[in-house]
Length: 470
Ligand SMILES: [Zn+2]
Image (cartoon, rainbow, N blue to C red; front, side, top):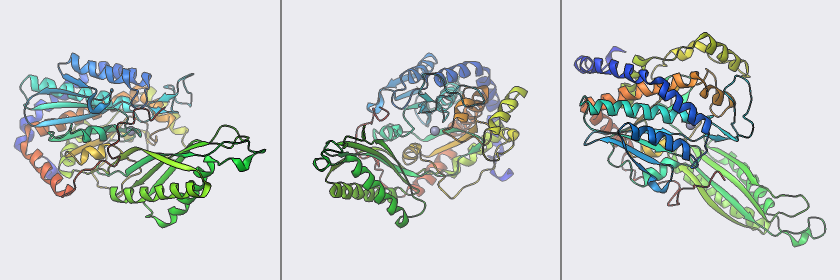
């Protein structure tokens, strides 16, 4: 461990400043808790996060940031800036909720009456912690303890909407030196696992309706088109690399069995650790759709909904962040929180890590599979050296996108974990502001890993899919 510490001089020089920053941000814990729980309560889905985005913007404006809203043709996206000149350090903030995950802040499955969405991925904490970190760094810049620019990027619709891709495509990250982000989780760890590149689309089949018993010969079933496509894609699975993930849901399969459906829609995701493979396999899925339309005498068209790159890791920044995370430490539960955690763990069908494991920090370890998920942070990571962490906002063993995750996010288990992330991001940004050598080394690693790849958004030149949740 000792070898990975920054040079003694640097550490000594910023150590008191870091201690002060940690204490200062913690002094505002109640304010940030209130904001996070408010956004948890709003539970707005992708591109509809009007109230959530407004609250975060207002918090930043009230604290001296200048905020540009509606960037990249997305009404709920924003860039908040403070300071001038270099380095420019960006912090990502998310705030979208997930449909189908309405859940009260209790340790048993209990949706809110009449609420359709919930923060099952903790993005209310994500956005709030990032804003908190931005404000703390702004104070240090204002006090002339740091020089440069801090930017908070308000990034809508991470869940399937690829919000950041449009922001990257619009060039909003072109002049940024380092980007810092985090994600809620069930442990504390700096991210050294990539993510799956992903391309998604809605395939729409058009047929002819007719009475399904009296005139079936006069009809052509759009649902047949969907089913034939799904059948072909399922056969493809044997002949594509096994790290591939393909999933679909039939979002419209007709309305009544006695009417031959003239319209049907299926929504597909294609994922693989390598973006080029995603493009190749996605094009094959398109062929299956065309073949299905041909064989069922229907027509098909499709709309690409999302597309994200894999995640380019930056070991230089990850090592610096690890030192900061160790310094901040994990989360400790009160007796009541431990009891809540026990109830949550009792709902699992598997054995989870010990409840107290969230007090620790996992060792820095590069994992050579791409994990299971995809993130639009991937596209940012191809524009700027990027580093992130996971902080324990959920009881150990809690999967993302679950009622348990939504429940934890509505309690102090969530908001305490969020502070681990906020503090670690502040300290890591401080390293970047205070140590130009670190930024230079991170950029060098970034250039080497990116090679001569010219960024091209997997979702092409489509406009933001602002209605993808309709
Ligand atoms: Zn998420």
